Length: 110
Length: 115
Image (tube, rainbow over all chains, first blue to last red; front, top):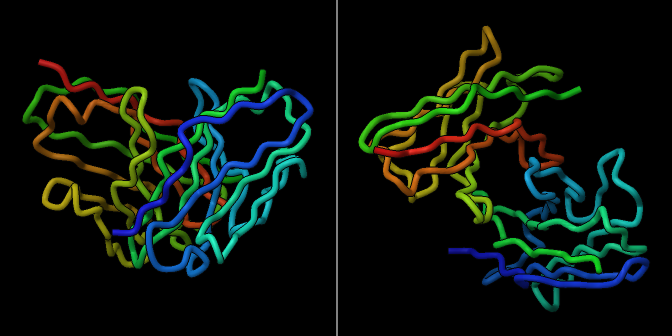
């Protein structure tokens, strides 16, 4: 079964840039689109990146997504970190007809 | 704008069944699959299955085969999720989530399974 692996946690200082990886277990992560969700404590997830690198309206351009085919991974990069970016970030893709979530990465901004 | 409004919190006993509704508005209901995703306390997101409101075809995650039923009412733009034979570890927040791209989420329904 296809799986997506994320680091459990990352931390960085305000104003800096952080990148969160999402690695596919097999096949090619580039075959299907990747989404990224932000979930602040006690809140509903929200989409920050869809279709690998697209940003929904209202999501600042500090958030960007990319695919690295050679590493079979997707990445979410957040620049100019703010304390409000502190959240758990989930990648999501799909395998044939199943939707797959990564395990989530807790971002601490300190 | 897209809105997904879910039914309220539930407390169930082990072995019982659960039925949650998700009322959609702000878009063409039959144009987007609806997913059901759950999140156990302190845990990550878990995809349960999805339904195509146009025709009613469903796909369940293997883990929920035989226990999960999803239906739609196109006249009211409501999607239903029914989970049977509840266990203690079904305690979670259950979300409906629209589509595979630029996903919109319902507000979540807390389900507690307790004797």
